[in-house]
Image (cartoon, rainbow, N blue to C red; front, side, top):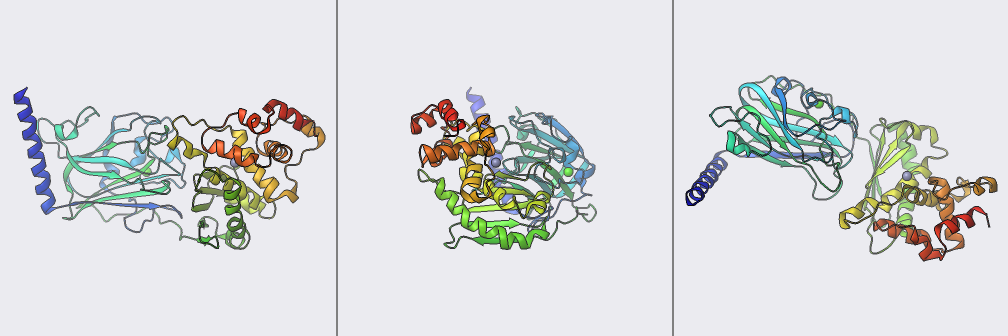
Length: 452
Ligand SMILES: [Ca+2]
Ligand SMILES: [Zn+2]
């Protein structure tokens, strides 16, 4: 035992000194950048993904962990292609949902002076950031293990730690395109034949914290001049805020510049006026709604989805908006802004016992504010007596909105706010209706259907 302790101590000291000596002469630099607007992978500080780097022709191997069933093949990491949208599983490599990540190696075929290692990822949320450690080896030494699984410390089997990467922002949205560039103040990171990427999840609150890796570049000192993937379109952004400057909004029109005039003259005033109103309607318990809301027109959304909210981001389906500018478009944005203010996803961050709110309550509240507060004159959620008699209170969207409106008008005028407050805390329960109206939910629904 005593001998072992001494041995371990000696190894630590040796490791410490070699690290210090390295830092004196050369320093590995990790540059991070997150793009949360616009198109393409054109960054300010770091070079775009290239199509002819040494990684393109390297032999890549999964040495530990499993790919997700929806992931692209490992080749997506070095095919010189990147996804066009924020949620393209088949355009990215990612480890299995709920797993602990894994390890990937790249064999450059011969010992190579590596000048830069870059990695790129893209997603709407927690699968955008990257958390990994990269190691290099020239493959020498009897101890070298070319495929070290996670139970082996790479440093113990012939690998040198190059850098740790963590692109998770300290605050704000995690989504978008994340770019990483690893270089060295001396111009060369090192001479390696093999690289090892030890990939971790970005979060474990839910199973979906495994990064969507779009491309990894390994640039050698003596390689050809890099050829880059084509640049994105120039940014078209509209920024505005509430008059007291408490809330800031951005509409990204890069993919739909034809909607700029309508967005500025028609949509922006509605958002500026109504976002604070929705916050007020759904206030409670010191809740602070998102102070920055980003809306983005996209051309890559499925046909049947007009818009979608994710945290404080709202994606707008450009082709749907082009058709509905004169009727449903603004109301649709109001509905999504309610989702931003509901913020139900955050309950699980503070309350491990948070229960998910049923979809009919989430959508019913959003449509209640839209149809009965924002645009009551449109009568978009009206029900004929015959339809009402057959309606289900939990049919979601307009029908549930109708039921919530009826409850507010006839039972408790503060009920929508109370319902939201419970849902936001992760404490929705059908008994809420009885607590606030003294009638069981099923009895309330019967009364509502009777049209009285
Ligand atoms: Ca790729
Ligand atoms: Zn919705």
